[in-house]
Image (cartoon, rainbow, N blue to C red; front, side):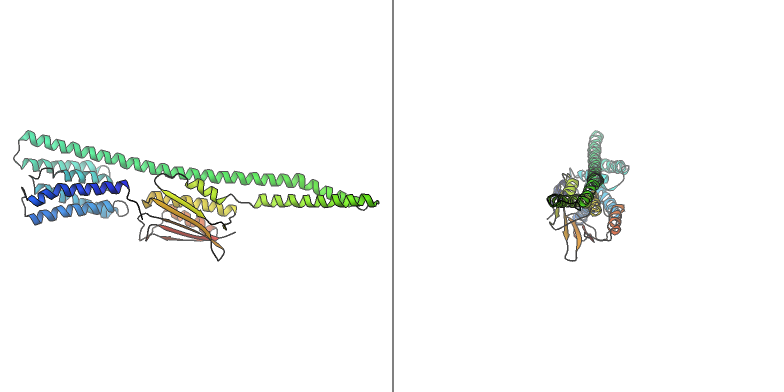
Length: 369
């Protein structure tokens, strides 16, 4: 079950505050210039359109903008038709704040200016003195400006934090890949040195002992035979060691743990079955695939947890499954990241399936070692 984040709680609090502000006017019918049913329709329509624009702010931007435009107009109508409703203009403060999440940055001041005109007309219609109208209008102008600037600052901080997290993941993955590459080159260097120095020397020793074995002397023959067996065994051990140094891949579990460790705001678990064996090429591919999955989750999913499982299937293939608890998408449109992920898997003879019906799920099959 997905946890409710701070943004969701803030939205719920704003919605409840809107209801608290409008309910007394609806119950008392004080100062309404239209029938109660019509004003109630305007008020409910304002709440509904604000909710729609908040829910659709990223994955359906045009729907969010159309709903937001309707909310702004309904807000004006709600305030103008109940000029004596006290704190009702606070609803326009919420619509101005919402512009930071839905519209371009330049549009926020425009909404504030229009809201301020509506508030001035509303206060002037109550018959108040010019000074009171000016002070009240200026107060709401300051409140709108402050909340809009605060929202813009929060959005920028969230974006910078997300970009920093993505860069951190990329840097960590590159560090793991570089470390594994350096380790591989070092193993190959040691393997070549063992083969060139010790291997050749032992081969020469074996040949020398083979020649000595044909000389006379039963006592010497026994020792020569024993030395010959030791030398051959030692040569075999060196060849096995060289083979292991060339074949061993970087540890997959350690590499992936290093990539996903301590990602802020996202609980990541990586489970790798004990029977999973990978080559160096497959390990590096999996590192890059997991890196892209984590980055995509942070950038688009709005998720709080990500589960990754790598297993060996009965048909002798490796299967990677990742699923998050984000909002998903009924129609998955791969961007550059997901296309790159698919290309990496295709390059080693695998296949990828993407599913956004319940969270976002990536299933990748690839040949095992």
